[in-house]
Length: 84
Image (tube, rainbow, N blue to C red):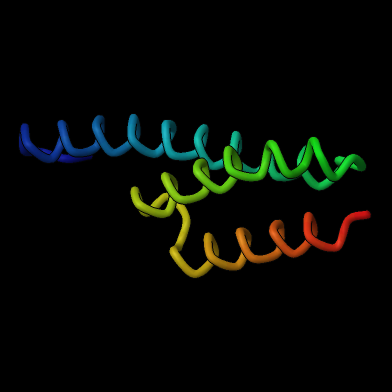
């Protein structure tokens, strides 16, 4: 257990931040999972900018790595473009 006041506060704040980051990451993963099940190209085209925006925000806050964000955006865009 930490002895310094600042170390105790750091433990509390890092746990709060960890929980928040886990929530945002899980929300993004669920949104991507739901997006991948879409069949209609028009609906997917409408929702793609929202998903990309969500991914970019998480990458900006380093909740996910910027390369992972790029890979996700690329794959999702390619998926929409190949739909009929």
